[in-house]
Length: 257
Image (cartoon, helix red, strand yellow):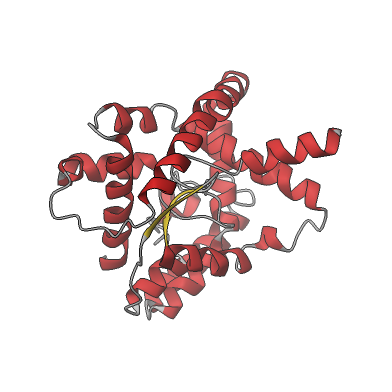
């Protein structure tokens, strides 16, 4: 019984209202998730006017299902994930939480490297390798982003979903996954590729330990961005539509860059 309850909480903690991937840039876990954050979407929405839903054409044939899942995810965030993250933030100083975020971003190097390389972005791929070497050696296994602060080497944050988009694969229809949050057909397929490029998919071999690590990543990330989801939600007439549109436009912008 204990293991069943523990598994439920751990799996549930993989979720964020925007899909899960915690790293130094505030992105979510590089396992079955997307490099998209509410902080990024909120910034893009404010700058580009997404909340008005202008010029954002999105296929949403599963809207009834998606709205139900949006409500479920929203409840999960407010009832469980946010309170846990607030307690965590109270106990752990912010510099330590930022360092943990840097560590997980550094660990996600294979995904960023291969995604950039597959898109023909050789320079970006080289930067990812350089960042990994510098941060691992000089940044205490990646807990400090020395590559960015001292060498001005910024991560491209590429992923397989973006790679598919760069090759002309259409995004398909929008999907709101339970616990995983916003996605589309292309990004859902991309998550599988991201998963196989994630070192945590192979080590540690113990599934319980993996779930603990994944949960820690998401809780750590949430603790650094509490309020962003609420800001986007409160600024919208229809939170579901605003989050959907902001997510899709954010992904389109990432592919075009």
